[in-house]
Image (cartoon, rainbow, N blue to C red; front, side, top):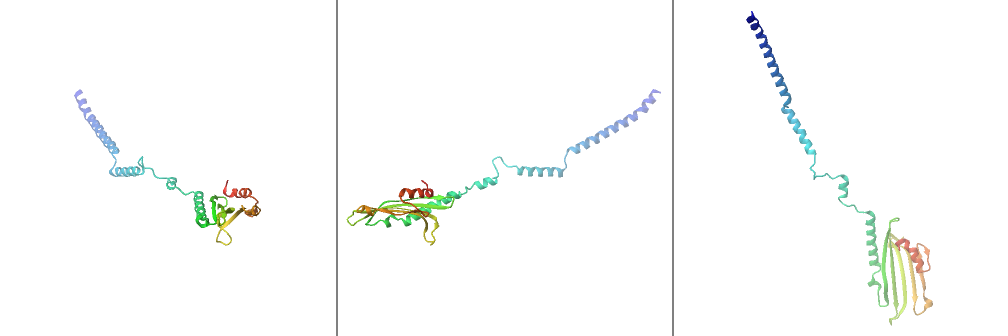
Length: 211
């Protein structure tokens, strides 16, 4: 009786064990497949990774910003450019109109001949002040007169004729060594204002060319 029961229980146990083994194998294969990406997914992931790497710059490579591009070539300062232009025009005016060789002669001795210029930004003017002092001699070589002259012009403006630079002011004084009573002031004015001495002329001129 005991042998019959043991023989009857064995087959169901074997079937149960077989089902467990088969189920476990299917679960293992399924989990294995989920861990391994397909060829298409692998290719897509590699392509995205390459794109990300190409967008990453090397540490030593810095793309220039708009500011860096603009400042790589220093821009000219307008004020500095106009000042330089004023310097050039003033020198040309002095060298051409006040040539020492042309002015000097047998009867004329140049004592002082120089100039200074100043660019005025407020009204875009290039003021040039020329100082010219000379002696006039007799045939014997004796100095008869001394002449003191100042002229101020705007080298960026033309006079009404359009031929010469615009004159701002003039000063002219002659001193006679033979006849002191013949000495005197010939002309003194700045922008239409009369003056009566060299000091007053310079006080009117200084705002244009500085001290």
